[in-house]
Length: 425
Image (tube, rainbow, N blue to C red; front, top):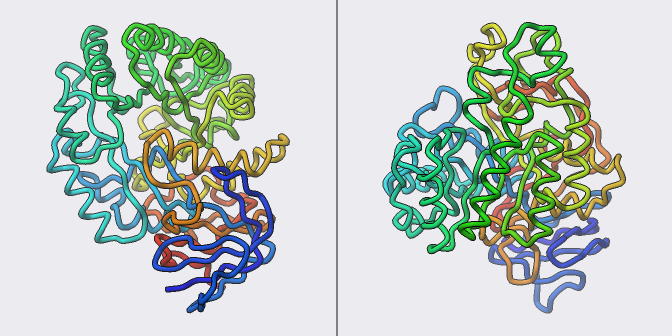
């Protein structure tokens, strides 16, 4: 279809565009910005007056639960939730069942995503076989079949020599490693930030140094091997400072943060609220402020959802026995937009959700340059709405912001020029 998106505030960080103008789409591509191209006849006109038109969001960390945990969610259900949140490109980690350490599993995920036809789904391959941290996976085969990076998810690689060899191998193949920085010995058995709240509640804590010690080790290995490393879901202010220094020194490192870490703190686990049980845990207010500063300064380049849908039973046990994670696709954009309250510009917020993650993943997304695929999000940045279980399209309803008023609502999502989501009246 030929689509004319009319009167919206076009924000595209990849081109430095922030202005009110029209956008024209034909054959799934962006064909013009501003003036209508000669001979263009619209099959559909979308009135975007008062709304922001930007590239479809790119989420670097979304557990889609399939294969292996379809009772928590499926690629079809979570892709539908993604486009409701304006997300057109998702990257799923390798901790599926079976683990994404073979080309067959990568192909299975791709086929299911194509069948769902809602969002682009990219696959992160396993860094070690079975995520056991003992034997390096078939990295070359995983790269050739289309994996955008390699990760061991939250499974630790306790043998530092294995990690070193994996990084050396990844360097030769020019593939990025996506690593979660958490020392398994310091965090073992913990479920909350080690501090006043965990002590008061009698919960086993995870100290901040569990992240910081691992970041220090990984940075030393990056300096030694030259491997490109992306730090996933940082949670402490000191870790941000360490990565800032590494970037200043020229090391090839980048980082992201989950949107909920920018808004919540360990205070929110009061009354044993299992919806706030996440990994890494919600840290202190000082850490939260450090993460915000990291985004503002560009040390942390990406805001992600860290989407982890769960069935109801997973959150009904005593806090320490519940499964960590938030069903976060549909709240990613409004939570990220709260950074505007700290005077972060809208174009920089959009950059952290679009072109920056796309560049780190090396995927063709995050831009509305003429000739690019028309993956588009249209949202009202001033609209208030209530997140509810009934409104959520994700199979998981485990979100601590349910019942809270959010600001910024998606009205349309287009994937390759096709409307895959439209807000109903």
